[in-house]
Every structure is written in structure tokens, then in C-alpha cells.
Image 1: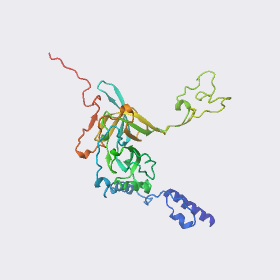
Image 2: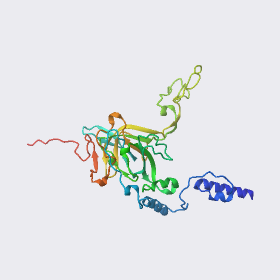
Image 3: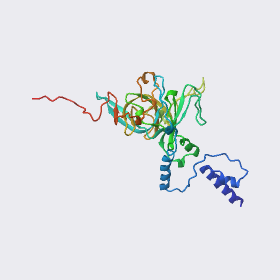
Image 4: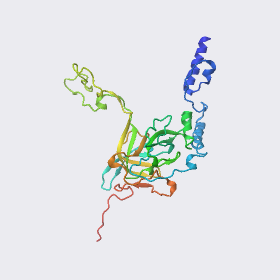
Length: 349
């Protein structure tokens, strides 16, 4: 009897850890102290694929039915200055492609799609947040941006409730942007690829591809030991890592084998060569961190010689205000694929 009761408590405890509910445990152990777990929406665990698809589609529209700050009032626009910090966007890395200048110079570029990006919440200067460590600098405001719609079934209830006030579906990724007070945006504002224009310079942050545990030759580019005479089973080893006498230790920061990749990295000073406004795709110069399908954080460059000198779409691009853009926007010195690559005159006889 005791063994069966103990196994029952173990099964319920395991269910509590997985589902985040303490009701079953409180019925058996009324005097127990239980650490509160994250509460998920109380959906049935045996949902069919059709019902899960219905819940996902319903979650995308239910938050947009009521009144939202964006529908009630719009932010009063202010003038842009050279010291203004605009917010950025979150994009999905599609892969790499090749562009060409009008002189025929090849440009490797990365295609990034701005997918379902919205402003989730806005915080005035000095206003903090219970879950985000910001608000200490009174000079800057903060915007929380979300991208890529997600199903609320596998998201915590507290996380899903963040999107009700903004009137947008539950998002897969959230990030924080520091902006100046004159660049504030209302919660619920959609962000498009038109936020950037060809010729601008941006900074991109992403998580590098994880390589696992690697040796010094792959991780740090060591030459390794000789591959022929005089070497026994140490061809790819690092060699000596310190002195035996003085200082008789291994210095901190020594390049040794270890985990490679899976780190957040910034790529600064990438030029925007092309913008596709129909599919919200940015073509950035060079490579960016992460694999295909990873999420990237994109904002205006902070390099002093690549900062904005002309008025950008401020505070962001609003397609409803009558500003019509072409489907493809190109930099001035970029070759358009629809133009002929070779032009020559035909002599008339």
C-alpha cells in the first residue's frame, strides 16, 4: 500500500513539473510547500492537429478584436535630428545571394525577411519593467519589439498575456531597443522592411551556429604539430600551455579546446543594397551570424562615419500615409537584374 501511494505521488509530481499545475499535489499533500511553476493555458493534452491549428489561427486574431492603444490614438510625430535613435526590427535569415554593381563587382549579400514584426510595449525614460533590466538611464526610452507569430499552446500564460494590450498575436521572439523620446512608437505598430532604405548602414546581431566541442586547430586556427617525422599522436594537439617553474600556472584566457559557436555576435557597418517592399526582404552586404531560419536583430549603425545624415522614415515607415514605394528599391550604384548587362551601339551601314 505504501509503495503504491509513493508511486502515485511520484507520477503526480512528474505531471506537476510538466504541466505547471499544483492541484493534484495539493489534494494528496495538503501540508506540502510547492514552488510555483509557470502556468500554461489549460488546453487539453490530447488535441488533434486540426484543433491545434484552430487554436493557433484563433490566437492570431483574438487580440485584435478589442480596442488597442494603436486604434485609440496615434503618437504625435516629432522632428528627426542627427542624435535621434530609432528602433530596429527583427528579421528571419533566408540565406545568401549575389548582387552586382554597375561596374560588375560581385557583392555577397544576406537576404533577411522582416516577418510579422510589431511593437509590443513602449516605456518612457526612467520607466522600468519588472522582467527587463532597463529604465535606469533617464535620457532614453525603450521599445519591446516582437516578431514571428507563435501558438500560445506551448507558451506560458504570463508571456501570452503581454500581447493583449498591444492587440497583436503571440510572438515567438521579443527583443529590446533603446530609443530617444522623440522616436517613440505606439504598441501594436507594425514594422516593415521599408523602415530601412538602400544606402543606409545597419548593425546586425545574431547567434552564431553551434559547432560543439572543438580542438584548437578548428576553434583558434592553430597550425598543429608536424605531420611526418618526430611526432607521435600529437598532430592536432595545442602543445605547451604554460611554464613549469615561473609562474607555474596557466594564464586566464589561454586558447584551448572548448565549445565553439552558439554565441551572440554583432556585425557592424553592413550596407543595405536592396529592399523588397512586397515581401519585406532586406539585402545586406556580407555575411551575418546564424544559420538559415535564425532570427536577427537589425538597427541603425552606431559607427560614427556610417551614421544617418539624411532624414530616414521617421519614426518608422507607415504605408497607410500615402507614401507609395516601388516593389524593389536599389542602391544608386547597384545593377538591376531587369536592366541589360551589356550596352553597345550598332553601326549603321
